[in-house]
Length: 66
Image 1 (cartoon, rainbow, N blue to C red):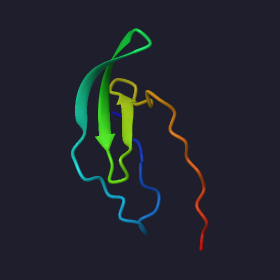
Image 2: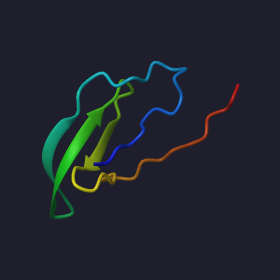
Image 3: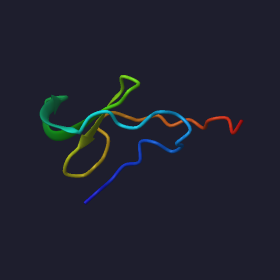
């Protein structure tokens, strides 16, 4: 079993508005069983259901403390 923390700070209203979507997609000719999580910010996080690795890179940036 795997997990991925999408929200690192609860100061913003970034909770997830919908349940994840299971999808079979093809990336660069390779079939992938994926899980897609939509957010209130119109992002779609797409993970390989088997490994939990992001299908496309997820960039994380530090946020100012104040």
